Amino acid sequence: GGVQNPCSGHGVCRDDASCECSDGWSGPGCTEVCPGGLSNPCSGHGTCLSTATGSSCRCEEGNGTGVLLRYAGEDCSIAVYNPLQKDTAHSATNASDFRPLIIQKTNVAFSTVSPLLVFIAMMAVIFSRLFTQIMEARQAEINAINQQ
Image (cartoon, rainbow, N blue to C red):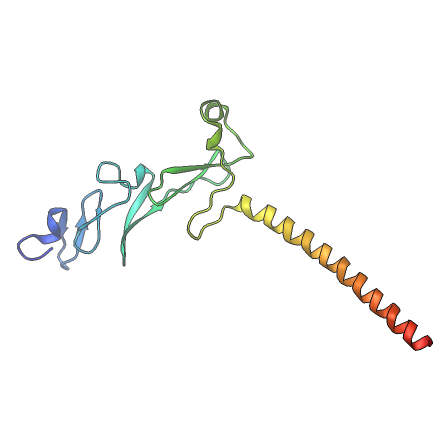
């Protein structure tokens, strides 16, 4: 933030000259606005972190077994619910809240992995049977040539 404006006026300068940013601000000099904005950083469901390219949110995790599994999205605004334990209070208001398929930049929810693995296994069986049929046909051709 500079000598005249330490931490850009959006934080407190520590003894080691680093900044402790105010809520909604991040970065080495507290110049980056957190995703979700100043009034609601990380949508109230995460912690704002400084990154090399600005700021990002580390979203809250649920307990992994209840209705709410975790929060997701750049600003932690997406509630990811467990499709196996629907809460009638949520499903009555918004059935789309039970999104089993949430695909983020590099994160894939577990529920997308299972159908993918089933598809891959089915394809492996199909190709295995096809390969076996081709090999049997070739062997039959070789046997026919050898009998001549």
